[in-house]
Structure formats: structure tokens, C-alpha cells
Length: 369
Ligand code: SF4
Image (tube, rainbow, N blue to C red):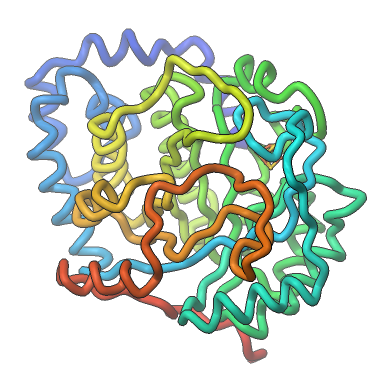
């Protein structure tokens, strides 16, 4: 059974109704447990659980220290092309927007890599839009080859590939895949993706399974919070993560809860997620999936990121530009506005002050065995 089949089997499950029936006694009984089910996770998102947030957060902090210590991994994204033929309603790079588009050549990718690596960053996340005639698999492979000269870990956040595509990139040296389903709600997904290959919900949904089956080292998943009901998206994100952990136990699983940020073009939503709701999802996820990484990007503010680190965060980005060519000073339109503009050094210093070890390098795939 694939995760797509699992989602189909949940179609009649009413998440809001389930949450409305959760009692304070039920929440207390969940907090007394060591292992949570997916329904326990969902119950912790109910209104009845809200008064217990402090207790849940403290338990999540203990679990995080138990499995990850007081360490936080640091990475930065590298955008190499913002050409995209998709029409995602919520993205600045969507084909309908008349923005400043750039596609880095290999020399420019090298220049960006040199600049970023000179700051001490060793984990890089390579991002592109989806423009198959320009951003070809060969182009990505060439980029990965260059990045491996500068970084010990190279992960990708690109359009979904076939199994063969993932196998080729893993052979080239990538060790991580980040892919967000955006929304797990299939009918909304259809409305938000009205052009380009990204229309295919199932092909995207099953991308983490395809990469995991090819033995990728780390997979990061999530939804884009703000597109739809936060409980719904959090429940299916957690269910997806649990499914991947059970079926691919050798793959390191990481969750992320990116929230919508201001962008080029208009996008209106009535589903914006509050800070409190964000914390509730994150700490509940920590209790449900104690070994999963939790990544928080610069979509979140400096103050907020500092406050939530002890509650479950294991990985953050720093020194970020979301523009193509943004590090060598010749940037294009940004994908979204970042909310934490601190430099890498400032982030490291802040972590030290909080008693945390910033981890720049915990993995190396640069030398053949
Ligand atoms: S979200 Fe990704 S696929 Fe969609 S328009 Fe933006 S860059 Fe393209």
C-alpha cells in the first residue's frame, strides 16, 4: 500500500469532528503515555488540548534533549534557477508572474558555492523551479558535482523525479530530499495547481517513497501551512512521516511546518496559522515521532525561532537568500521574504548563548569508500 492509497482510505474521516469530541481527560491520558498513535497526535491538536500546551511543550523539550541533545544542525538553501512552468497560486516563481528570472550557469553555481562555503556552511540544499527544458536532470547533476567539492552534504528541493532520476542523483552524491506536498487536500491541490507538471498530486505525493526506495539518507516532508486547515495538514504530514518511517526505517525522517510568507503576486487565504498553532503542531509531532528531525526555516522570525528551539527543533537554515544568485550579489526576485535575516555567525552566537551546539558538519559523502 502506498501513502496515496492510505490517504484515499481516510477520505471519510472527519478531523474537526474527531477533535471536537476530545476531552481534557483524554488529553491527560495521552500525556501519560510513552508511545502515541496518530489519533493521539491529532487529539493533541484539539481545543481540549490547548490549555495543556505548556505541559506538552515541556515533555517535547525533554524528548528532544533525550534523542538529539542540545544540538542544532545548520544548512543554507542555494537557489540556482527560478524558471518554472508551474502555476502554483502561492509562489512568486509561478509562470504567471512577470518577475526577474535567472538561471545560473555552472561558473555562477561555483561562485555561489565558494561564497557560501567561505562562511563555514557545510550542508547545502539545492533548489530550482520546474522547467524541464532548462533545468534538466543533467544540469542538476552538473550542479551537484560542483557542490560536492564545497559541501559535505548536498540535498535537493526540486521537482519530483522518477525512481531512476533519484537513483542517478544519489549516485552523483546527493544525500537528502526535501519535498513538500503543499496541501494534502486533493481537491484543493487541484485548484491551486492549474498548469504544469505539478498538477499531478499523486506523482508528487509518492516522491518521498521513490527516493526512500533508492536508499536516500534523509527525507524532509511537510505541507505549506496557510493553504488549508492547519489540523488537517498537520495530521496528514504526521501520518505521512509515520508511514515513511515504518516502511523505510533506514531513512532519516525530518518534518517541517513552513508557513506562508509575503510573496510576489496576490494570494489570499483564510487559513493563516498562528504562532500558538504552530507550536502545538510542532510539540505534538515531537511526542508522536520522537526520533524525527524538525526543521524550521527563515520563514520564521528570529525571536520565534529562538523561542521554539528547545521544544523540538533539530535543524535550521541560516545566512539565507531565496533569490537566484543572491549570495554573489546579483540576485533575482526572491521566492518569498525571509523573516530572520541574521548572518550565520549571528545564528551561531545566539545558539551558543542558549547553551546549544551549532552543528555545521555531521556527515560527509565527499570521499568514496
Ligand atoms: S512552488 Fe515550486 S513548482 Fe510551484 S511555482 Fe514555485 S518554484 Fe514553481
